[in-house]
Length: 290
Length: 290
DNA sequence: CATTAGATATGCAATAACGCATGTATGGGA
DNA sequence: TCCCATACATGCGTTATTGCATATCTAATG
Image (cartoon, rainbow over all chains, first blue to last red):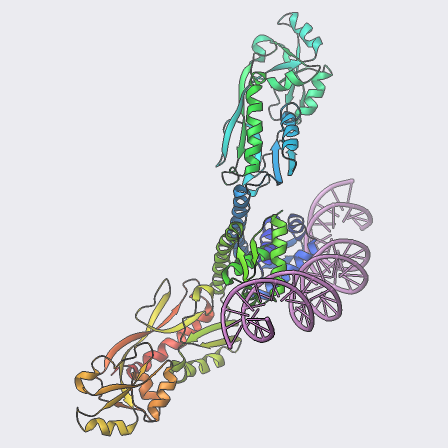
């Protein structure tokens, strides 16, 4: 009478993705399989779940109802996965950590090095990403984030407070020393697209020479001497070839947080990682502020 | 990383049933398949879900957690199934009705006859059972029950009020007429196991000649002249060979209800069935009371 | 101590599910 | 109008899943 649970899940993903192909990708199966599962579910339920239109599958009312309850089922699945990870007291198995790309090299990597040698049975996976992983879906067990607060419903602890300052190649230091009338070329982050606040006060002739959507590329451009970049202190200080310049007064910036889902937080693996990460940041606290 | 939903469901049923065989029966698969699904789930989750003991599978803490969340998932599945049935406005497809065995012949069957000829595309399945079907699990879409109230969280309407009286073969009518000193042999329902309340007041020499767990068998015994049976009026009146006897004064009894789950209640099929059943009971209301 | 019932493992053949390649239909852009 | 990208349908060979038969193990029983 009823349909298989895997088929209900499949319906959910077709509704979510809007196409067989998208659902297949999400489920890790071929889209033909998705089509067959939908057909099977329809046979089992004796209902039409999707209208086959020229531009894809469109859910019927019944299809939407299936998807809705399947979404509820998925919430429990996700809750279970977090719960199982959270109560796991073994120092073996998978541990997924995510952190901003540019923080990894100078600050996370050394911790990871010690972690993996101390806990050789833990299979650590590091997701370098500036995008926010969904910890509810266990896309990561632990995340290092730069933000004003731990956010949503996550457990978090502050790893460091940080300031920003202006950094550039050495020739810019000389140029800026010539006086407030020099033309200052700024490399700015895409979504700001204008000279940083306060820059015009000290150097009225500041201008944007380039916008960019990637901080790593901006660093490269700065090292090459293209202009001045406002960035976190730690980043300027740890990038060879860059020096702090007085184009902009240091200003406090968002904190660095270590966050995790409350369900997953008690996991031995996550705790072990925290226990190495936190002291490491504490010791190097000075590198983040002016 | 995660496990398949069908495997989570399988874990649930092993925890519920306590053995692979029980789970297999519940799921409609061979128990070997159950064992393999458990093994697959354990591999996927990298966890031991069951201890393999000599006398069966015993869930670990992790296994219990999986089962618990899977149970929550199942609640949503059941809710979905009811919902889909409830919104279905077609007069085709399956309709499962349950009713007490002895009510079917005289009162339900005539309605069913008309129903199936009026709605030939509805696949009516009648579960004659004195056990209470779980309407939450959609073991039935509509139930005729003899009870004091519609009960739990079900929607219901009262089909008839009814009385009980004492019935027996004709020779008992003659015997009882001889006076209050005659020995009255009672056939009583198993779980009462004693002479009905009030019987000793009119016939002090009443005694239990047989207890039985099945009313149909009791009817047979009564027709055979074995003794007197207290039963609903409708039953005595519709059973050939039985006549009401004054061994016991008529007393009001539990009502007859037509009940259904609120989710399923609006279904066109259920509504159509109700719409035939209710007038039928209303017309014959007099047959149930003294 | 042998036996039996209940419960789980395992090997093998049958079946069902799957992925891939190919074909069809539709709509947008050059 | 033609081309191409998107989206689904279908046929076929491959793989994974399943059921059955058989073997193993344990506890309870005679």
